[in-house]
Image 1: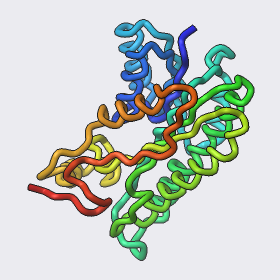
Image 2 (image 1 turned 30 degrees about the vertical axis):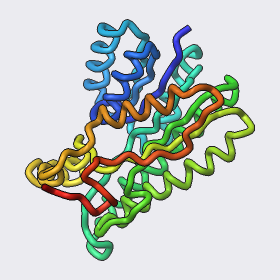
Image 3 (image 1 turned 90 degrees about the vertical axis):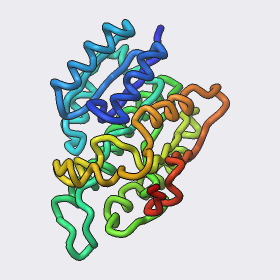
Image 4 (image 1 turned 60 degrees about the vertical axis):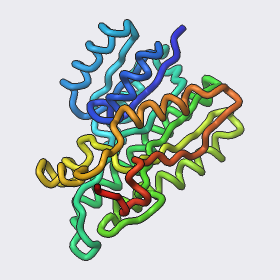
Length: 252
């Protein structure tokens, strides 16, 4: 029987790249995201290319009732999840704390922290019942190294860093591995979402250097997931060669 990976935020960027990578390696997939049309299109493409089983669940990860309903409605055989990739996350705005938007703060906290918790609680209990599993949390260099005007986004990713450590302790007696992968600058929809569709401003974020690609991060997540059963990579920071810290990038 094929292994199963559940990937949140699979409609674009790192999540979509992870879907392709795990499908290529023969995993059946559960893909979640808000954009149902994209999920269905991706599922059809992966099934045609790799001949793997795909289940899709379109919901807003910020809504606990939706998370529970859609995931618990999956067939029993799809709850034998080997790998959970907690990828869904975003940033909104780039203002100093005194100018921040309450709505932006709520969106980041509800998505990056609470959404991760909603999914993790459900799937961790499946894994405990199953007797196996590996949770991979997508953090950020922002959770390790606060940068100007990053305030709340950095705080949410610092929370992911702390939750990753806590999960590893709590799930240790159950044989469930827990890992965090913390990328630096990755050229995806991230900056476009942060700047609310301002493509010109988003493009400037990546000018003058070569950022990571979504596939770079997906390859790293696959490396972490594919280690032998007795090996766990607790924490991994992944950066473009041109980036030294969260705010220091050499633009040639």
